[in-house]
Amino acid sequence: MSKLVRFGISIENELLRHFDTYNSKKKYKNRSEAIRDLIRDKLADEKIVDPDAFVFGIISFVYDHHKREIQKNLNTVQHDSYKSIQFSTHIHLDHDNCLEIIIVKDKASKIKPLAESIFGFKGVKQGKLTLMASYK
Ligand code: NI
Image (tube, rainbow, N blue to C red):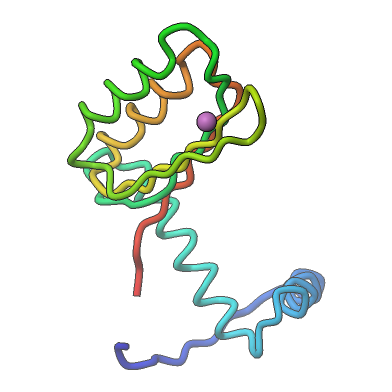
């Protein structure tokens, strides 16, 4: 961890009150920890919109495995992106539905189109892409 630096912040009473309520809900021990996390989150949000940014995350989706071509399409798109995919797993939710979770690591410009192609397949009922970027 790099050296900590102190700096002062001016803030409206009302906003500080909301912030303290948020901090106690999130179980922060002090305001500094909460502010550091908020800054990291904001910087990461900014970073993941950059197509060249190196990101990691999770593509999760639910699909009906009876739909024609779905297994073939999912297999093809994942093999096409094998360099971005670190891990994947498949859970049979019930008679018709499957949940697949793919952990990815690559440039945002590689990950987003992969998720979009998966979510666009006929038979995919719900999909979520969670992206993160690291900040110390
Ligand atoms: Ni299944």
